Length: 297
Image 1: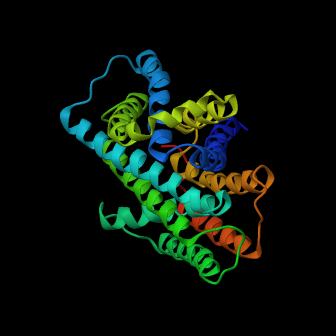
Image 2 (image 1 turned 90 degrees about the vertical axis):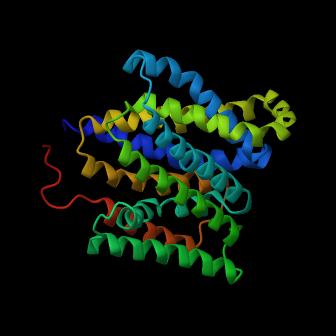
């Protein structure tokens, strides 16, 4: 029971990430993609700036750390957001959420190839299950089945997943050198600077944000995905073992599917059920702690 609050924080963080898939789809259909991504970063900076000062004081990363943060911004914010938003214009939020569930498997492959970490048999099985889930969705699209999905849209979302995986691997190399909230602030500022030239040609579309519903969706997307999820996740990690925390990533595809079906009215077919089962199995295999790993050191 002592760990229950931490587990609730971890679950809430991943549930919010999943819910944001549907929100991102609505935003991508209403506004230019670079503008959505740039405004998301700018709004996040407005909140992260005072938070970083209050929680961690004035910290200026070293040059090498800034270079790492710039790469994290390029892959984890620019590529991830543009891939996700562009993909969600073509595919459903349901299938986009399932594709996002491949992240632990992609991180496992990247860790083996780049960081030279051993790809255990269980992680190899997780990769195989994730590949099977992607194959099921792709074959359904190529065969004309399904309800509104898109092979190209799913591929674009997967490109975003690869960007997020690179961010995770780069963050591993930076771990402990820059405080978490400060690192997030710098990453969001660098991301906004990278996205600004792409966003300026479509700046006129920002007039649509005069509609309260659209402005509310953008504020929710920015402040939950870039701020609240971060705070909840790291608050949970302070008490829960990191090896157990990964299991809660299963809430991402589950919440994305629930929002897509209940709020966006998307159909849940047999193909989606098969893909969901394969993706969920992949996530659990990749993140479930081995015996003895749940003990705190």
